[in-house]
Image (cartoon, rainbow, N blue to C red; front, side, top):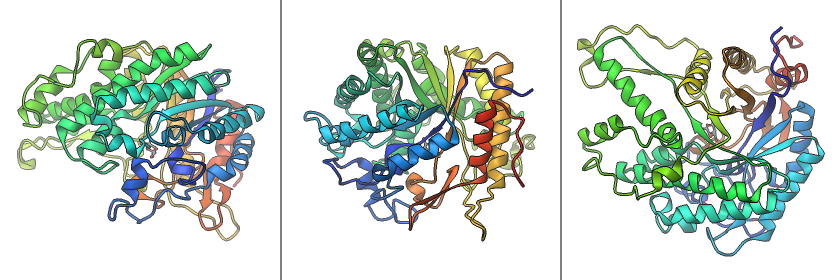
Length: 456
Ligand code: FCB
C-alpha cells in the first residue's frame, strides 16, 4: 500500500503577482514587477501582471476549485504593496481586507491557509531606496510581517517569511533576469544577506502575534552531481552546491556563510576581499532563529561540468540528463527530490519539511472534446510523489506537498507561455479547466496514497 501518513498536508501553491491581476485596484501601490514588466524587453512575450488570472476578483471560484480538488491547505502569498503601498508607513486597509476575506473563505471551505509574506513583489518605493541591497528594507519587511501577522494571526498559523532567497538575490541583483534587473555580484550578496536577516528578525515577531505559529522559510534547492568523476567537475559541483544551496541553508541553520564559497568569489574577482561589509555584529545569530519547518521548492537537478578546463581535457561525461525535459528545459528527475530530502534531513535536521512547490511546465491545452490530456505532467506528478513517499519511508520528516501550481499563471520573465497549472486557464475568457493532472491529484488526495488510476 503506497499510503501517506494520515495527517499529510496536501496542498497547492500560487503567488500574488502571478495570479491576482487588479494591480491598480483598492489602493495597491506599485511593485518592482509592475515596473519591470513595463520595461520593454524584460518579459519574453511582452505581457504583464495587470490581469493575470484575475484572481483578485475570482477568488471565490478559485476556492471552489480547491474544494473540488479536496486539498487540505493552500499556500498563497500576500502582495506587500497592497498592505503598504509606499513600502512602509501608512497601512492600506482595503488590501488587508482582501486577504482577510480570502482566509475566511478558505477556512469555510475547510482549507488551511499557508501564507508566504514575500514572493518577490517588493513595493517600488522601497526599491527606489535601494531595495534589498539597502539594510533599511530589513526593518520595512519586519514591520510588514508584524502588521499582516497581527491581522491574520488569529486564523493563520502557518507562515513562510520568504520564497526562494536565491531567486530574489541572484535573478534580481546578480544576472538581472528578474526585477529589479541589476547585474552586480556585490549587490547580490548584500541582497541575499538582507533577505535572510529579515527572515530571522521576522520569525520572533510572527511568533509574538500568532498563538500556534508554525514559521519557516522556503528555499529553492537544486541537488547537484558532477558530470564526470574528474577533480575539476567535482570542484565545480562543490562550488555550485555552495553558492546555490549552502549559501542559504548554512546561515539559516546557524553555520554562517560557507567559507569555501566566499573564497571562490574572491578568487573569481567578484568581490574585493573575504570581508563581507554588509554583515554586522549579531546578524548571523539573528538569521539562525529556530524555525518550525523548512519549505522546499524542487523542480530539477543540476549536472555540473567544469568550465575551468577545455572540454577536451576533461574526463568523459558519465552522468547524463534523462531524455525528458519540461517546457522550461528542466530535466524531469524525480530521484533528485528524494536525494535532496534525505540530504536535508541528514545535514540540517529541520524539524519538519514541506515541499512548498513542485511541478512542471507543459503547454498542453484542451483537445476538441475540451479535456486537457497533460500526460507528461501526470507522469511528473506521479514520479515526484513516489519520490516523496520513499523519502518518508527513509525517515525524512516530510509533512506535506504543495503542487505548483493550482492554475496556469504569469511565469515571471517568461510571461504566460509557460503553463505550470493543474488547472488550465483560458486567458481570453478566464475559464478554468481542470487538466488530467488535477483529476489525478484529486484522486491521490482523496485516497491519501498513490494506488489510483485515471480514467482513460
Ligand atoms: C519558482 C517560483 C514560482 C514559480 C516556479 C515555476 O521559482 O517560486 O513562483 O515561478 O518557480
